[in-house]
Length: 223
Image (cartoon, rainbow, N blue to C red; front, side, top):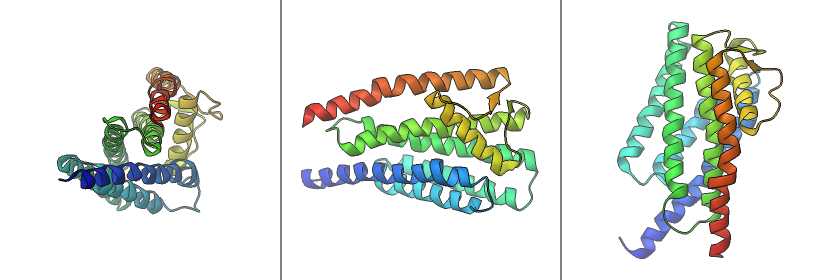
C-alpha cells in the first residue's frame, strides 16, 4: 500500500469519527428524549444504530475481524428487538436486548477509542472521537441502569412508566451522573445503582481533565 493511499485511509477514518458523533448526538439529545413520546418510533433508534454500525464497520474500523464482530452484535440487537415486538417473554427478552445493546455500544466505543488514540497526528476529528467516547460512557452506563431496573424494579425512584419512558429517564439520569448535574427527580435507591452512578461521576470528572485535555494539547502543539 502506497503512502498516499495509507493517508487517504486514515483520513477517511478520522472523518468517520465526525459522522459517528453526529449520529450519537441525534440519539442522545433528540431521539432518546422523544422516544418517551408517541412522536418518535423506536424504529428510528434502530435506524440510527444501523448508521453507527455501518460507519464503524465501513469507515472507522481498520480490522476486518472487529468489523465482523460489531456487525454480528448489531444484528443480535435487531433480532432481540424483533422478537420482543412479536411478543416474546417480556422480562427475558428485555434483559437480553439490553445486554446485547450494551455489548454493541462497548464494541463501537472500543473501535472509536482505537481510532482516536492510535499513533499519528492528532486532528480535530480525533478530538471529536474522544468526545464520542465520553458520550458513550453515558450510553453504556444507561444500559447498565436499564439492566438493573429489569432485575431490581425499585432500583430507581422517579422513573417514568413504560419501556419508552424508562429508556429516556435512565439516559437522562446517566448524563446527569456523568456531568454531575441535577438528575431531575430520578434517584438511585439500590446500593449497587448508587455505586455505579458514583463511578460514572468519577469518570465524568477525570476523563475531560486527562485524556481529552491531552489530545487537545497535542493537537495545539502540532500546528
